[in-house]
Length: 432
Image 1 (cartoon, one colour):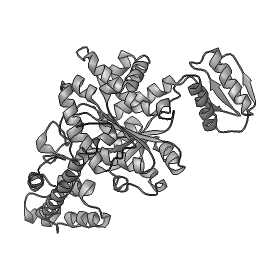
Image 2 (cartoon, one colour):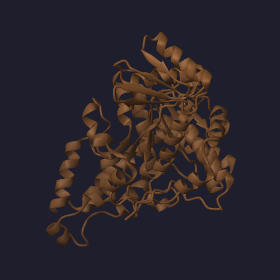
Image 3 (cartoon, helix red, strand yellow):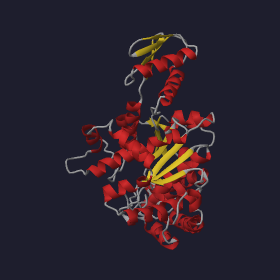
Image 4 (cartoon, one colour):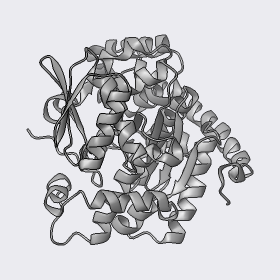
């Protein structure tokens, strides 16, 4: 069965392995051993897939510049599903990334019809305060899409490389789709690529932490990054081909001069250059990218992405801002949040006798997921709870009490940190 990934819908993935086959997403577990200090989401296979994260990881391990970028559409309360992205951004920032966070008010206004004022209120009060409370540092960049004119200028440049038929094919747009909705798509691609602008140090690896439903944005943006390049560098048998796929004579000449000055043996043609030295195509691509940037071009590196599993909603299905009963907001009353946990759907059987005999299904349990994703620091505790549930020895009521007590305590501490964050908004160039 075909998997449909809808950035604005309610995608619920039953079999994540299909994403590897149908969308070319790579398995994260294959590169996990290369990470010295993995986030719990990585260790616990919550982050399950990636595109080109090995490029980001190499920059991280070699202490070279890289960035992390993601965003939030202010269409409802920030909840624990959003907190996953916040935690991933903060982890990368702590590991050396230049961090960027967009409040996607253009998207919220165009797609959901939310007023600009309401977008600002939700953006500040729900998302940004929680982001700061969780540990985001002022060295990062937080912005509203409508106020970032460098990003918006880039969105215009990217739109010139896209066409209606391909964007419609990716997103399922019809003749009824508003132009504003389409423009918001270009803004998201510009969000992802703008950390590579000269203002922020030029081209660098960028990782975007997202749920798999956002992969359409990544596929389009990676394609646009490729189109904005003026050269294509390819390893051929015995030589490297540098083709000017959109480079004029002056840029071809500049590339040839740069290669010659670097001591490489080349043969120049009208629209391409052949290089015969035993050097990696990757190194030559870096040099050619510098030529592009020095001549006023972008030289983008295709952005990487990591994908995390969806949290199960408390009532089943996907946790969604449009269904308050399915989630716990980061601003929710701690006692109300604990009550929601006590009423949540679990993976237990219908009767105690049946549960003891056949055991529960923690992988289908919203309560166990809260522990797995957010409320248990000790991996061994999770492993024990899992075994006890599967064996039928651990009752759902006991797990609910553990999770309810912890979520109550977490929210009390988080909301105290949020109050402190109000006084720190100026550090991020923002005001309440």
